[in-house]
Image (tube, rainbow, N blue to C red):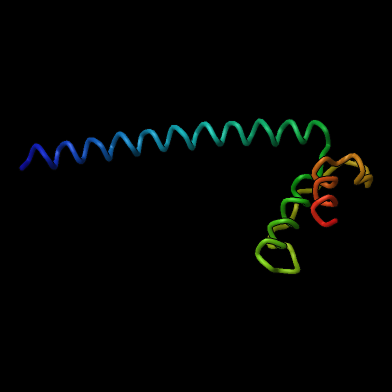
Length: 88
């Protein structure tokens, strides 16, 4: 009986380790993408907040977007172009 519980616990520990490893990898990938978008001066936070608010059915964003040093030209933003295509 003790052996069965030990195997079950070891499986859970291994699964937790695997999930933590996946989370670390996703965080690194997310940071890389965010840094890349910041390098292009893309205003992704505003778009993400607006899309999230629309998906939630809320008319106002739930999160304040980060300030950007980008000029106010939304045509250079890839995400802005995607949003306009979705709205059309």
